Length: 157
Ligand SMILES: CC(C)(COP(=O)(O)OP(=O)(O)OC[C@H]1O[C@@H](n2cnc3c(N)ncnc32)[C@H](O)[C@@H]1OP(=O)(O)O)[C@@H](O)C(=O)NCCC(=O)NCCS
Image (cartoon, rainbow, N blue to C red; front, side, top):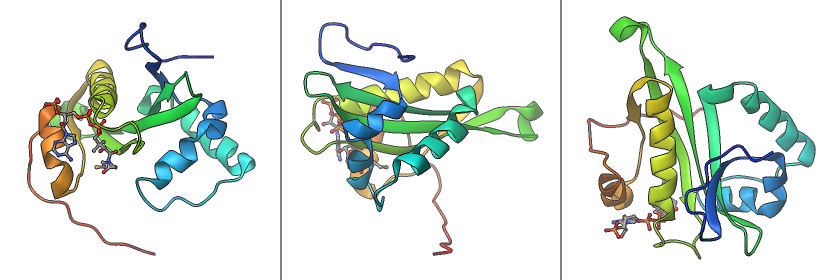
């Protein structure tokens, strides 16, 4: 079942919510272009997919498929954090944005960001947060984001 919103009916590049079948279309290999992501068994993929699907609009992974090649060429995710502060409002976090190296520079990153940001607004968040490297700062600025404060991290592995 395709649940996403086609961004451009006239081309082969549309944005959809992730489907189980996207694993065989290069979804994991695409994530490997972003960071460490080992091969995932079909069983583990299915388990994680179902876990995330059960969260509904609170955790959305979207993809852009180049349907002419049957390849996932872009992905990004957004999840919702429910707060007590600001009258129990909600904040969105955008993560794991990546465009395949052979598809960069075609506005796909911007499309996926726009989809994720619209989702955050639609579900009633008062802001969206994401982390990025210095190299990607200008990309996010072009998508309407601005720099605020710094990121801190502690790794457990
Ligand atoms: C960063 C990334 C998502 C950009 O995707 P993309 O599809 O190539 O970018 P777009 O074509 O949508 O670019 C949109 C605009 O941002 C600009 N832009 C893109 N990447 C940029 C960069 N690194 N620095 C400066 N500007 C950039 C483009 O020139 C374009 O400008 P325009 O609207 O004036 O034409 C992609 O390069 C990528 O996946 N990189 C590797 C993974 C990664 O670093 N992900 C981000 C994790 S925080």
